[in-house]
Amino acid sequence: MTQEYKNKIGIPETHTLKLISTDRKVKKGVDTDIYVYDELDQNGEKVNSYTISDSTSMYPPFNRTIRWE
Image 1 (tube, rainbow, N blue to C red):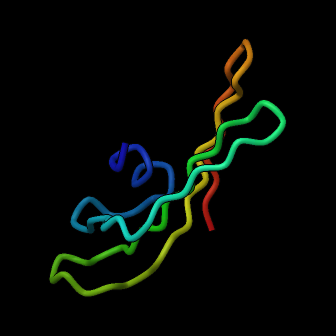
Image 2 (tube, helix red, strand yellow; image 1 turned 90 degrees about the horizontal axis):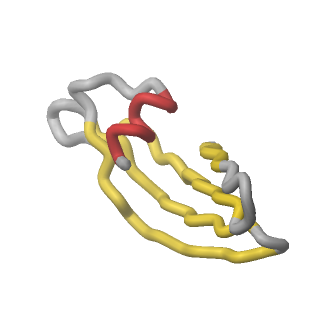
């Protein structure tokens, strides 16, 4: 999944995402996983942080939305 997030956000291939924390919320039929990642450059230095919300509807058609800030 990390590669999927990197592609969506537009993070360079030479950079990595380091998982810092996770959380989960369920509200009104939507299951949302919340991830906090640090973006590390090729030298392992932190260059950015992202909070990614990956939401999936619990009912058909099971729509999925990925947002980040």
